[in-house]
Length: 83
Image (cartoon, rainbow, N blue to C red; front, side, top):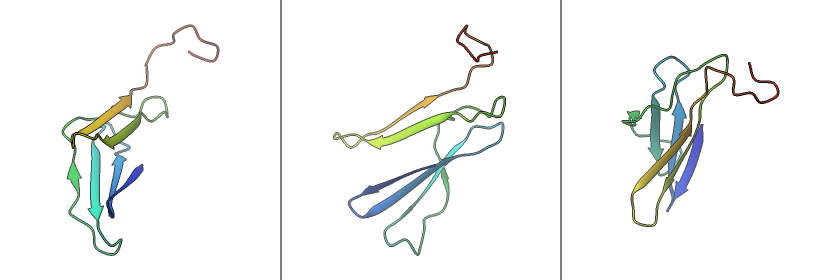
């Protein structure tokens, strides 16, 4: 889950903990009434091995929204503790 306060409007993002990986959000200007839930077009990856994908959302100076995410790997990569 991630919350951003942009000029007094709260944007609350979360990733669904199911196999869809959908990223959803709501907004509020007063914390008592909220917009309808919306879905971001890009999924952030499903739950894998009890590990959730991590994501970050920000508004760039240009006014464009940017999202990054780190999807979990289903295979080990030779690092200590990896399977």
